[in-house]
Image 1 (tube, rainbow, N blue to C red):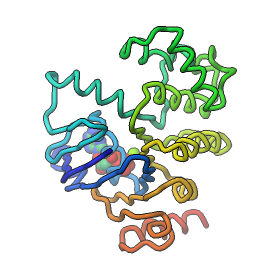
Image 2 (image 1 turned 45 degrees about the vertical axis):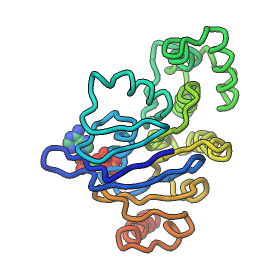
Image 3 (image 1 turned 90 degrees about the vertical axis):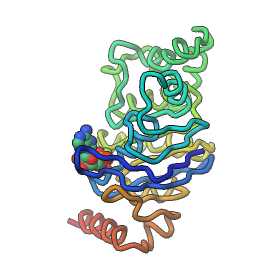
Length: 250
Ligand SMILES: Nc1ncnc2c1ncn2[C@@H]1O[C@H](COP(=O)(O)OP(=O)(O)O)[C@@H](O)[C@H]1O
Ligand SMILES: [Mg+2]
């Protein structure tokens, strides 16, 4: 489903991703963890070409991404992004649109689905994320956790092959996080292919088929949670989890 080959990305003279190679199979859930500034967001953004990269390649959902794709590739990139959904820390809902209109917008405009059909799907998705009764609410009338669940429903409305989550619960009060994590957990159980950047280690441990520790622009460790979280093999991963545990005790 995803194949990353020797991906390199620089910002000025700073190397942000260094020769990252990785494979993700259909139905896997990858939890991405690691210290701030390590390159987690940059990697996700390269995977759906919100950012370009300097060398290497990405195959994702049947599309091949290369350095320097531009205007001429706009149609390809648009098609790719409808197969590769992204959910951001800050939700990024359209503030002037109700929940249901946020969800139906892309299907109606991009896929030309008729309104009644798009709305029926949106209501199904709102039910799935526990917000069937908030269809006509605007983002400012919803809590952060509810907005994030609308954002997930909006991503699902495109019927993506892959979903990318960049710290989906980090902007939320602790009591709102569980509902959002529950939705992501259900998606994992349902076989959706997902990459989830998270600081919630228990959550990563529970949902992930594999965990990647990203530090200094490389995947320092890649394996099942029972290895990476419980018994990390590399010094970088060991240090990251040790620091996390001591921060929790403080
Ligand atoms: N637009 C940018 N310009 C310059 N440096 C950037 C830019 N975006 C990210 N970086 C740098 O790239 C590195 C990785 O950032 P990021 O991918 O956001 O890390 P993470 O998500 O793991 O915290 C950091 O050192 C950050 O300062
Ligand atoms: Mg980040």
